[in-house]
Length: 232
Ligand SMILES: Nc1ncnc2c1ncn2[C@@H]1O[C@H](COP(=O)(O)OP(=O)(O)OP(=O)(O)O)[C@@H](O)[C@H]1O
Ligand SMILES: [Mg+2]
Image 1 (cartoon, protein in one colour):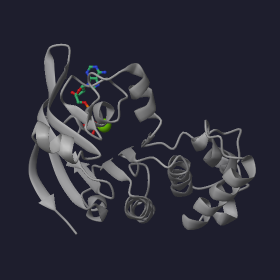
Image 2 (tube, rainbow, N blue to C red; image 1 turned 180 degrees about the vertical axis):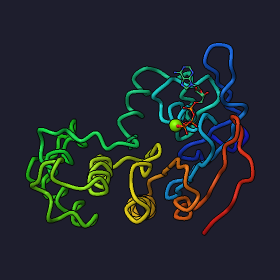
Image 3 (cartoon, protein in one colour; image 1 turned 180 degrees about the horizontal axis):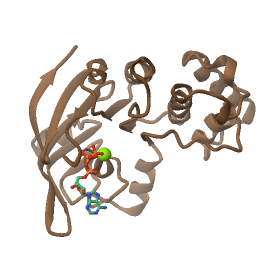
Image 4 (cartoon, rainbow, N blue to C red; image 1 turned 90 degrees about the vertical axis):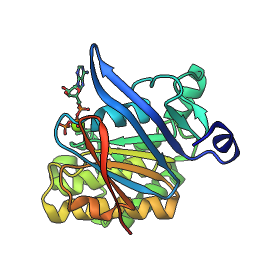
């Protein structure tokens, strides 16, 4: 995308010719990617191809190089610390393991996702229950994380991300520790989230079957996209 086009109608996320390496070795080699609100992109690729590195830079866990990662038309590689913090507050990550807090119930875990919200507790709890309902988790709201299955835990992690109303969600192999059926449920719910909440989602996976839920599939090999496949 040109500078003029970017300024006129900035996409949610625009990655332009992103190269990145740890010390001497280049891991990402000129990656380009544009993500619109409501889209869910699945990235597959072998271990070490750079998927997590790409998510860390796009999701601002690491500051990206200048001119390469744009959020809503703003260059995140050379923005102020205040803007960086503001953008980070609008992003959420889900990882391979759910990382629920063991000392909190399911519903309490979910509300931590809106930690800095000024929303009254009652409204926040009602919203959390609503999200758990949508994800088919109504019955387990009062349980402890150790009392629910791995698939349920990962859906709780998704609920915790959703309650923060992110405009971007990055999911780094969120289904890697789930069986196929649970994995399909989690990714299906992510796709619904993208459509209903106009959230942009990038999910990485080793399983090409999981990526069928995405609006677009990309394959990363040795730091470059190869064989892009458009889906429904
Ligand atoms: N913090 C780091 N310091 C040095 N090298 C790193 C670091 N993180 C990742 N790497 C290297 O960068 C390359 C890409 O790693 P990355 O984790 O992005 O791959 P990946 O596609 O996510 O792999 P996997 O599917 O195993 O999760 C690998 O060769 C890895 O060893
Ligand atoms: Mg990885």
